[in-house]
Image (cartoon, rainbow, N blue to C red):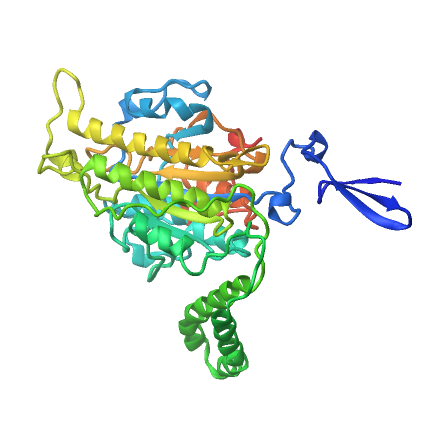
Length: 448
């Protein structure tokens, strides 16, 4: 008698009183009811769903970025033209705003805080809670070497918009070489290696931390509420180290899409647009493989800073400076240099999406098993408005989300985006945000 086994892709049976098993090719039978592949590549479970954010600074020019048509097959205004090759994989969310509720608009701060925390605030130090990527990482980040990876293509580890609180920023990996060493360096364990031997040095470090666990518990029992709050983040980091060491002592689940990339060239940080795009593309390709190798499920990528440090080759004028100083061309009706910077930023976004879609995984791609939120911190670059901040989504979150549509809002709070992302990724939250930004309305238009 034989039986089909979805988890192992095997025919199992009895022969002459002994158990036998014969491997099978991949069959439609191995797909679930949503057409998503079950993954022998991940220990027989379903392929993991990843989450990330992608940021570019200084917004756009609304008339040259916002599509006119809602729904599928939306039009591509000039600044969105670079995403044409990946348009079916990208949804555009326009018209969503940060409702300040009487607070002042602090350029480059208010938009990011409002979008990422659901809180109308004019300083990072007033953040009442974590940015939504941290909440998602807490929900899905276990089981990988890194709970989340923060990356910045500008070469500065402090260029990060991922915060556990107003004083706890998650610093960024700031170069392709640093990212390669972080992911594929000494701590990397190839999930497809035939043999696995625990590293004695890791075992020793794990033993040392385990030895002080009880002492930590006794100390917490003696502290007051304020002291407990002060040491909580430190102990959180200690627990993450313990979890990381525990994972390094186990054979990682097989990941068929995982291929260790070649070490990248050591590229110096640059504000020059082509150089920035090159560094960013390298980081995107390595990040894609880091997720395919199950090193992380959550990431935050920064292409350009909130004050948009980018420059055109040979020009002394940076993007941010141009938004303030360049005159609107009377014939064209917009700032040509600013328009070019915005368009080049969208080319970088298209490169990022393409890098995620290039990795074949299960019956689809890595991008199919991801949800990425791309956004800026302002809408109209010239006046740094926070009404109508540009947002895009890429990926299908394992079949939970539609792709390739335009959702046009008329000023709804942008906290609806954060609430929806958290719910899609399994964070148990029914409403999110504070004051005028609090909402319980998700984006039903994007749900599959």
